[in-house]
Amino acid sequence: MPPRTKAAPAVGRKIVAALAASAVVAVGVTALTSTAASAAAGCRADYTVTNQWPGGFGASVTVTNLGDPLSSWNLRWTFPNGQSIQSLWNGQVSSSGSQITVTNSPWNGSVGTNGAIQVGFNGSWSGSNGAPTSFTLNGTTCTGSVTGPTQQPTQQPTQQPTQQPTQQPTQQPTQQPTQNPQPSGDFYVDPNTAAYAAWQAASGNDKALLAKIAQTPQALWIGDWATASATAEQVRDYTGRARAAGKTAQIVVYAIPGRDCGNYSGGGVSTSEYARWVDTVAAGIQGNPWVILEPDALAQLGDCDGQGDRVGFLQYAAKSLTAKGARVYIDAGNSAWLSASEAANRLNRIGFSNAVGFSLNVSNYRTTAEAKAYGQQISQLTGGKKFVIDTSRNGNGATGSEWCNPSGRALGDRPTKVNDGSGLDALLWIKRPGESDGTCNGGPAAGAWWQAMALELARNAKW
Image (cartoon, rainbow, N blue to C red; front, side, top):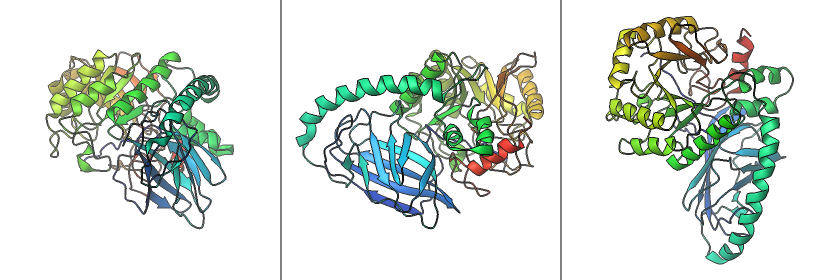
């Protein structure tokens, strides 16, 4: 089997691998007085331990809002055995002892009736790792039942005005300067990543190592782990922040039907929904982000069922994204997968009417020199099209054909635009270093933060 890229979300991304739960707790709702944006008249909470290892674990919490639509949310629970959260995505976390509070990110505060909130995290434990038994959503205990609309009139008027004005101004000024000091360079550093959270929580040498990852621009991965409308809001927030900072955002679109042929990152939207999903997400674009279109989709063309008209899907997605201002690169796999002639043949089938070029080495480990030579061969066969290389983890090159959490790897060259006449447009960190390739070689689920691996990559970096 050829080496494949394994994508990885984090903050802002749900884990795309199937969750092998070792602990699941489901609870629901009764109506209580709430001080949040609006009261949840009912909710159901599901807690799943997705992965566990000595001293650490990964988990997800999914809360379904059974009551009125919410404009913002506040989720709380208490760990029974003193566990703590090391990094969390799809929300903003704070803790007091074993009590955990998670509030919405700027892009996912709106939750409709029967809509779901999902947060994932990596945590630590010692002795026992019991599941929480009670969750509250905006002050309402989730028990699975719904009460009458007695709270409707009092909550709508009092909570809407107080939270909207106070949260918007206080969070914007304090978070922008302190959390996201943008380094020099062209690309945007997002403070809402698992790496950034881990760096802030670390100390000593670990903090210095994690800074190499947290303070380096990386791509935002978007896919079918959230609704299209929620993803559009996430894109609007992220690209808006990048534009305000005068930087270029990077986005990976990863939702093609039949994605990853059912492997660690399997999934994707249905064939009937893909075009609509792309249009909805594209509508959130602010400015001119660089977009990596569907890693592995072209390299896996025809490898499995459920792909539909994959060539047509890629053509449509490139057109829709370009029309909204994106600079699109169609992914073409890596130098150990397809021959240069076959990669060029597949790229030419898609065409470049709505794409500036192609991407290489996404989530893989081939050296920059090897990937560049490969890219130049493809470029010559595609009319001189430009290309970008993912250098996030290729500092020590590949270890044979191993693509899934190989040990001994290192961070690669830092992102930078290139103009050397070779056809290479830029070196980018497309895969987020420190996020697992999947449940292989001791790693947690695909996309989950793996601090030990992150520290190893940073420690081995040649800079």
